[in-house]
Image 1 (cartoon, rainbow, N blue to C red):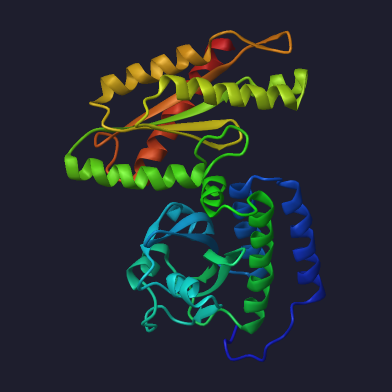
Image 2: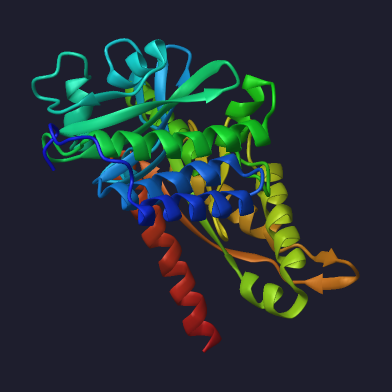
Length: 338
């Protein structure tokens, strides 16, 4: 779409979609991380963008706290506020558009190339009187956005701002906690997990130390939901989170990635044998008897492990390796049960 086209209001269909999005957001309750993820996915679909991102301003950085499309694998990415269009958006508190990242001096060109971004629009996210971040749509093509896209972005950023206010009315510090933690279990969410993994992996590179990634998938959660109801299923997830945290060290990061999937970052783990022992302790702890409202429920998990640097030197390789190992465990269990 030509960036010089005359500004047009969003079509009635687009406005209806935004109203539907508002209804869907209301159903997310106080799960601010979930709201931000939902908005990026819906915004990408509404605008035809290649990706959408929520960046929160944290100290001197802008941090990817929700991302879809081409930016999905950059969740947790940190950019310096100074020298980025998002940082400028927060400072100036206004919507900004970049038609070509290769020629626009305001952007972090290296970060744009990493994401695969060529043009973008960013809108400020406000919590009360404070601008706390930016909502961004991105395209791999130059000059992909018009003034109509700016209007859609402004409306959708208002939905996130309303969700922020409803989740946390006054305290900005609490806002960041809600945005980075799972509402059901209180554990780190996917965005914070990726952020911590990036930082810990960089530290492991510098210190030539071992780092472990555990991927845990709960076994038997569907039967619990089907037989005893979702209240029992939710309590089973909370209990699993508590048990994983109990066994893990304070320096580790325990996260619920979504659904029945958990993950743990084992910092300075000392090698594969230590990581395997930790995984065994987790499995044993999770399998302990669990009673909910006088009902005995069975908890279990399939656990996959990846260790830096043996299984990969970058974040994506380690996550994929841990995922593959977890599914291998799950397949073995199913074959034995069959």
